[in-house]
Image 1: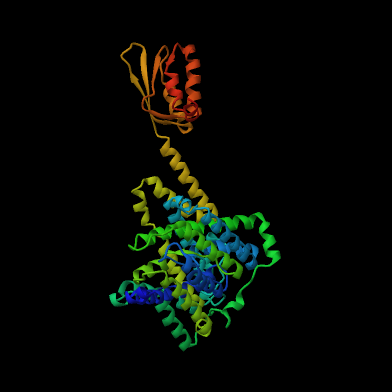
Image 2 (image 1 turned 60 degrees about the horizontal axis):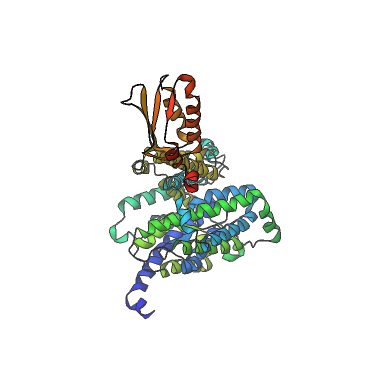
Amino acid sequence: MRSYFSHGLFGRDLLGSIVVFLVALPLCMGIAIASGMPPAAGLITGIVGGIVVGTIAGSPLQVSGPAAGLAVLVFELVREHGAAALGPVVLLAGLIQVIAGVSRLGVWFRMISPAVVAGMLSGIGILIVASQLHVLIDAVPKARGLENFAALPGALLGALEGKGGSVAALLVGLSTIAIMLGWEKLRPQKLRFLPGALLAVVIVTSAVSLLGTDVNKVDIPANLFATMALPTAETLIALAQPALLVSALTFALIASAETLLSAAAVDRMHTGARTHYDRELTAQGVGNLICGILGALPMTGVIVRSAANVQAGSATRMATILHGSWLLVFAMLLPWLIRATPVACLAGILVFTGVKMVNFKQMKSLATYGRGTAMIYLVTTLAIVVTDLLTGVLIGFGLSILRLALQSSRLQVDLADHDEPGAVMLQLDGSATFLKVPALARTLERVPPNTRVLLEVERLHHVDQACLELLTEWGRNAKARGCELVVDWKALHLRVEGMRQAA
């Protein structure tokens, strides 16, 4: 402890914690509103993510809290099953994460294709923009992304005509976005640690208060923890519903994947201690268990706050713990200040954040790993917008597996002349799987009548049952056309996995 203070590490962590606190405060409240929950639910998750998860995390410089990536899932859950269902679902998701972490499964959550994760974030960004554009004018968003886009022109027209929404709220939201854009472009180097979101909240909230503008404000109780909704026996029993079980599993999978990929990104930003993935996954599970008990939002490791933590020069996990403490102190002692914040201001921050999440430029970098990778990203994004988050992610995951299967089934099939009259050489180079049955069948159909086909298997790495049966059947029926299949069947069978093991 003495060396911690003597080496100036505390000073670095103190500054870093303040920077992260300033970034996290508006995001915690904004994400809660986007999730259909009160702002206090987001603040409680930020506090738990800082103080509890920060203490036991496997990634010392990663910051956990409510994430935009889960806002869409929470919104759909609350809309369909009510806010009372959120706590038990988050609790079960946390339990799944703890079991996975203790079982040392952390690294397996990283097997999800980065293209799918990138597509998931882009799709979520589009959905957040679609919903928060309604909140930007003090209107109520629709349940689905496409519905939000379709209803937006009518909502804007209604606000302008005074039939719904608010022009004043629209000006508040646009001013927030303008300040954040301007600060991002013109921010002095010495003030790079000051987040544009906080600057926008301070300026816009002050202007609204001075002018007495009539817009919706953030609703937060004087006692932060008065909003806690502990699970009851009835809500816990409701977890037996298949829909809620699927929601819990989805929360756990997506939160874990986002957390561990974020942790890997944080590791690339600094040269300090590396992430212990199983410990990080367990810590996230403990955090979500507590958030579930308190009826708060689910949490993940968040790259925006984590990057701010590293860039501010934080040295240890103490920065994360302190940022959670500042959130707790601020929410407990200054709730009146939070209540002065316009909801449209927080919506503006989330619109800005959502647009940043939709980064189609990364298709170019993904394409360096093959056009199929970029296509997986694009399809995942569009599928999430058109259907829902879970369906879109499953589609992206399925495409990744299909692409892997196609790549692992590369087979070059050639018919070459042979020195022997009336004979040809059938050359197979690669892996002959069921995916290549059509190509192999078309090649065999091109064999002229009265021809001996000499099968070369030296460059054949693997053959599965489908291709083996195709060759066997063709050889059996070849006599009817005066043909003959000549093959070293023993060598061919050695390239079948099961038969190779038996041998």
